[in-house]
Length: 377
Image 1 (spheres, rainbow, N blue to C red):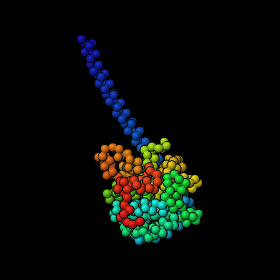
Image 2: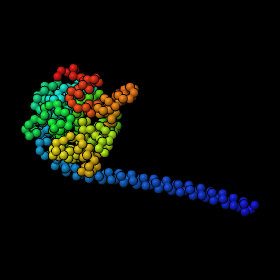
Image 3: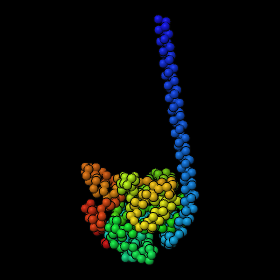
Image 4: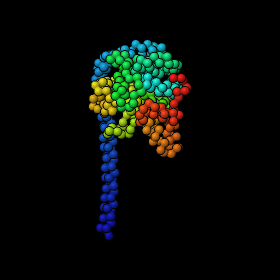
């Protein structure tokens, strides 16, 4: 009996010691894990700061090399003089379009939606319309400019070897189409470098370029969403951080394509004025000039390449900025309620995943998105 009691006592003590030991081990393990996590976070922060500082220093030198070259300062006088009539200087957002004669009716449609949904709410926008041929330039000069935004019409046809780019409504992937879209990086870089000399981090007046294809329709004002995504809260100015979270934001065509995820669309881009974005635009331009091509594949490849380490890129939500395959096709395959809910959240729809001027126009008409009757062609 004594041995049994003793054994039970010893067993109880052993159990208690074992339990205590396990508790201590668990506490040590938790503490060790917390320390490791803290070290990883600190290292990541330090690494990001160092990488960003190096990128700032190296890119700052590159910006000085990039922006003064070739014809880019041709745009500066007109952009600069246009910005002098406001106390804030250069607008926070510059909406950039490229237009040729073949898609004049699509510009009219785009502009009608833009004026209804955006212009009446935003009086600090700078609208830069790039005219790609002489006829479209003449039309645009007589086109009523939006009253609530400052508009600049820039002829670029005389900057390309003294000749005009194609004035036709070129089909996707055609030689003429590739020639047109291969100039996109050049135009965006010209605008970026012509404002403030391409020098970023000037505070409230830093430039953010929003490039939009004209086969898009703006159903809602996208700027609150973009501002929140880029800078943080948009409730009031005190909540906004001046340094952007991203160098480049883009709409998404596919969740994954050619082993790239997500696969960005170059038909709707948000580009902050940062050293990394300017360096990227320069590389993108070099690739397109050396080999005129579809600008989207090389855009996606360069963003993931080691040529610009630390560039911060992100996506614009597919529900808010859907490609044509979703908005016009796939959403309609589900229930009517789901389709209606998603379209209620849409801000900008892109009429892509369809080839041809007439096919695009017919699709807009069938979905009630063609507004050419409001203002005469």
